[in-house]
Amino acid sequence: MDLLFRNPDEDNESPHDVKLRAAVGIGIARMRCHNDTWTYLLGEFEKTSDLRTTPVFRPPADDSVVRESNGMITVPMSGSSLAALFDRCRNIRVRPWSSSWNYTSLDKAIASRVESAISEALTHVTPATEAHGVELTIVLDDRPVAKTD
Image (tube, rainbow, N blue to C red; front, side, top):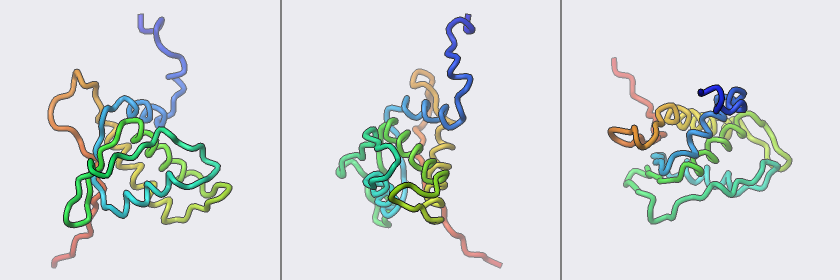
């Protein structure tokens, strides 16, 4: 029966496309990162480039962002905004340039790290009817650890 109702386009989907589809099904996602990282990501969406503009990305109202004293923030965003961010990060990583912006190694490193964190979180998406437990927050907070010998 599944063969009759399957979508043949799904057979040709890349892993990135599968994760985009998972992201847009999310009602709300939370990302915890440093305010500087979030400011960089917002600025990326304000750039004019040959990348298709993404009106799907809508940053949350400032009063819904939870701010910590150490500069870390938790940002709530819709699944479609998460998908747009995930897609933009991939584009930065795979496109070294556009008509008006050159992406540096630093841009690509930031995009790669954010894309990786979102990708990992998207491997844990389940339909709300099957979800149990605590909601996952995407965390960008790697820390250097002092070597103790």
